[in-house]
Image (cartoon, rainbow, N blue to C red):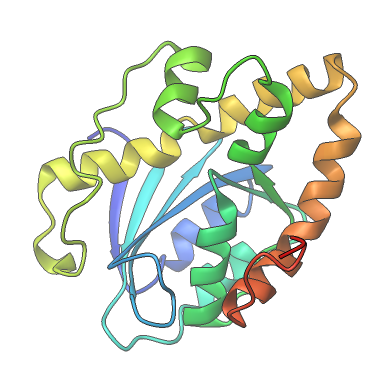
Length: 208
């Protein structure tokens, strides 16, 4: 794969320096499941605005990734996720990372693309980028990080490759429809939802 680097446990100092020059970094994670308290973080994927992708293999029991933490907490770089609520929770639970500032393409899609109920990454990439994603490796064993297949690495790379250009297109749509202020409010609330999720609070805004 062009513009791809595989890392173990953390990004290198050289890669950190490269990414710190970007205005935005796309971020995604692969885990053993959907419960951060039970299912460990296995892989962190990153991509800068030049399309340079890296995948960081996380070891079982690992609790520190200082360069990754520096990048995720850099206040001059927007971290772009698709359903960031989950990834931000995983990064905080595993490494104590307080990700900021953030943008979530799934939230932006729900606010901007009210003409559809399809807000998954595959649908979003197809409409906004004209590209059909192969999601066949989505539900696979990410725990065996030392022996990830080419198919898994390709899938993981594509999960971050298009997030930054889609962010720009979604921002244009939100501003055109006078909904950008709603996106700003949602982004501001997102860390609180992560805190509630990690504390096992569910649906606190619902009546029941």
